[in-house]
Length: 469
Image (cartoon, rainbow, N blue to C red):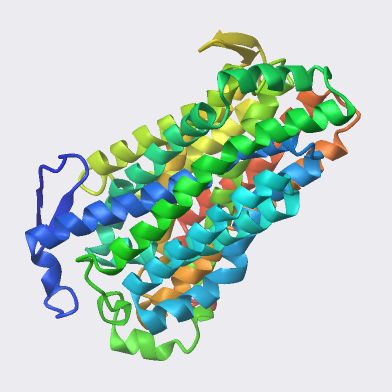
């Protein structure tokens, strides 16, 4: 196998030639088709990031504008990511029936409907309609994730799948870097920042408070209307794009004997253990992102100030991490070793969040140093997703779509883990808000310890029964 870099631009398009003799992917060798395919996939992952990572600022934004309790604010994330758990397996059957391209179109259209619901939800300031809109956005993303991730994994050699995941992942994390900045710039205008400070200070009460909140929340109407239209149009573009339809039962299996010996997807331990690893990774990532602004708030920083940019700093580090993956995997670093190293780094950072303290001023933000350890986790996080997915899905053959659905279900960790984290915060209610949140970060340690184990040994397990050497 050989590869060459295409200058559109250099760091994004790594095109593989002579991938397989299978007729399923011979047409991928066309240079023009492959470049267009990579552009479309990068745009899809950009959309994943744009819609997903904006939740990190939606949580505190809705908590203020809808006057939510802590529990209700975490339901913002829950409503979005629980769709992965509910829709992942139906998505696999949908993809088996209609194929990848049409499935991606339907996913984008579902997201379009979800974004459109933000308009009436904001107009009447109804929390439940926002949750329904977020759920439909999650349903659409579940379909897209079920299609796009295995597609990227099997379109080339499995040993360099993490590289390809890193390439398209740059689109995802670029969106993560700018999602909060775009939201803050488009939705939270300068006049709104003044209004937010006044609301937080308790200046308004009664009818005056309701009027002020109505004014704030309507800022989401135009951006989400534009997003709904863009998602609908992009769905049509994907449907009639040059993306080749791949058959995973042909291009992602070990051997006929191996596949015939396994009668159920549950007989693939590396997949099942990988699903748990993915659940912990996604859950801890959302804890780090979704709580960072609020954690800074316990130290005196406000959403109306520079603290609103904290998730973008985390995403910037993740974006850099993807470039490291592109440069190093697999030529200098095996994707399994990258996963092991990155999980170990995050395990250390988790311990430092809890055990270290000291006030620092950085980027206009004055906080405890533990906040910046939380932000630093963004760098190694980049290669956890890209490392777990190919190790878990390798060799599934006819079970590839269903296995991908299991991994997509694991993305519901973003819905569940922040709620578990909040439960630990509530258990520490006798402490100050700062200490309560800081001690709750203990939940990160067993999660990263498990991922370290999976990278070291778990992915190698081929049978639930012990076999004699």
